[in-house]
Image (cartoon, rainbow, N blue to C red):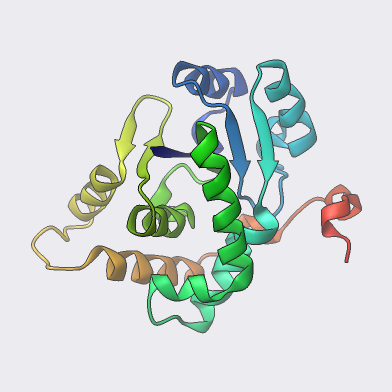
Length: 202
């Protein structure tokens, strides 16, 4: 079994993204953005993109309220002992279980904004799926695919970490802690119309 991941910012044209998904017979897109809107890429606003996907026979399901970046960010900012500690959060655990059930039945990709998994909480989700389930992880780019192992290896190469004996879990934990400490994530800024969606109401 394979769980795919992608960041839509790698695809300015939604047609190109959809064609990539159709080539590998993706049936489900799980949206893991905290807020399913984008000022930079409005073609990926949930109502617009979902309508287009339906025409192509691809279903979209929103799980950002369970496993969105902001949920993960809160944990990393507070500090966690390990990536596995995320599973102690019932919201994250429920979201991952929902994702698992869907991906077990349908060819599924999780979608967020960032092009690179190592700049996104997809990195943590990918690690947990790789360690806790039979799924392989494949990251989709506009011009290639990368396995989880290849992605981590490239990150180490680009950051001169190859010679250091760093466990993958620690590498991911420290990477995300650093990102969330210094980065003002776009997901915290969302358009006014998003507040009118049912999923944002208490």
